[in-house]
Length: 80
Image (tube, rainbow, N blue to C red; front, side, top):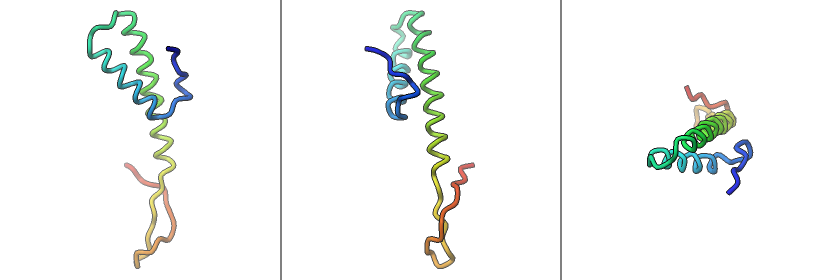
């Protein structure tokens, strides 16, 4: 099976493949060279997932309310 280009993967697809890689590595039945190869792909997948999460986080807004509880607009969500 051909590897999908990571930059074109959705967050969910990248995470699923990353979980498969972790399971294979934890299983301990992978040859050293293959372990290195899939570890490197796993690291790239992790970075891709982190970037996708950061993009999503930047798009999330918080609804602001008036003292009466009515929506008045939105502001950026402060996640820190």
